[in-house]
Length: 156
Image (cartoon, rainbow, N blue to C red; front, top):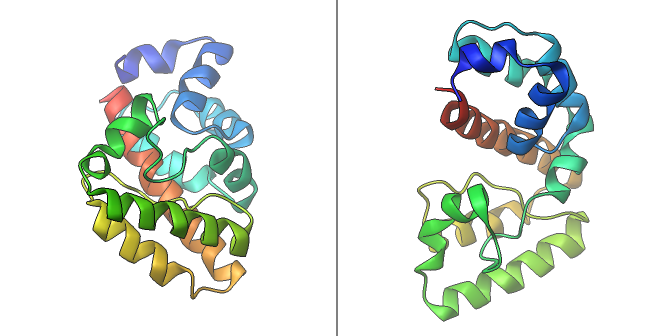
């Protein structure tokens, strides 16, 4: 769908499109209310501005684990480089995901597009050293990056 079509959608349809990019209802409502945008860059800026810590938990709940072979749709495409990883790396990612979730109480959220499994594993391991408040800020930045990629892909 192009941006002109998105800008003209009824609110419920716009919310659906936005929540297919990021499952954060509050964020989607703020972004939808800001229409029309007129340019993808304006949409991306508004999406970044609208994103808050309040959006992180619902968004993370909709994201599969990195390396999860059952990922579908956008997540599967974004993690496509991970699928080609050796079993040892995938096993290490699975163990890292469990450790991360035990430490922080939520899925390891990272912008995986174009990144190898080894790179994502190294990032996961380094983020385990973060305190919970710092990690939430990092995860929010990763969510913003994911949103920009998905919005650009949906509306460009």
